Figure 1 (cartoon, rainbow, N blue to C red):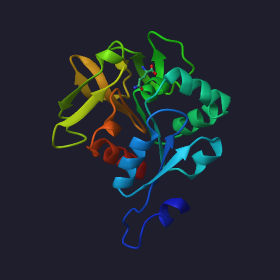
Figure 2: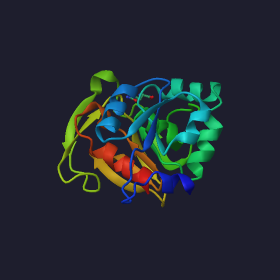
Figure 3: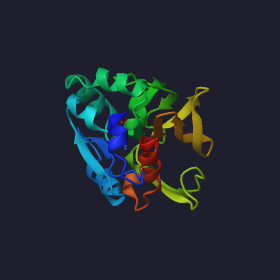
Figure 4: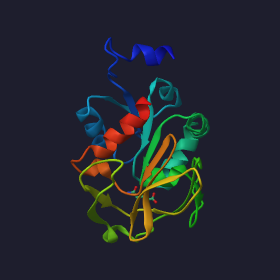
Length: 205
Ligand SMILES: NC(=O)CC[C@H](N)C(=O)O
């Protein structure tokens, strides 16, 4: 409560959020750039103690099996899971989506298993099946935004609490359940900051 009050300016404008980006592997720099462009601080998260100073965390793309193993090895898996279950804002892009899913339909990777979605890993095939497209996601932006898919997963089933934000050819590629946001694609690899703005807003509320 004290933290919330202190982080508002005199005129009640929110200043300088601290957004963590899990830095074990994957697209740290690209996410950092967007967070900085929006005027907030990006923190490279590698230790459990760092979680306490953050307003939210991004789990970037990479290799979910590797990131899952590192979460266990560093002792961050359980504290992070508990924090997310208590309402800590989190956004998983691609491998990050896999880490957040309660159910993996074609894999048994160690993961956080907090969000009520069933996810298929590498659902679009291999690296050469990577692709990009533009889609209007009204909740996030007034204009169609570029979506980049790289060995991407998609969501096959969602629980009652989950809001589907974007479907592509009948597959769910973006969804939100309260404090948890997931995207199959990589907004950090495009110039459009709409998704980062959306997540920062989630962290402010
Ligand atoms: N770009 C990505 O994050 C790819 C995810 C990767 N295919 C995995 O299973 O973890």
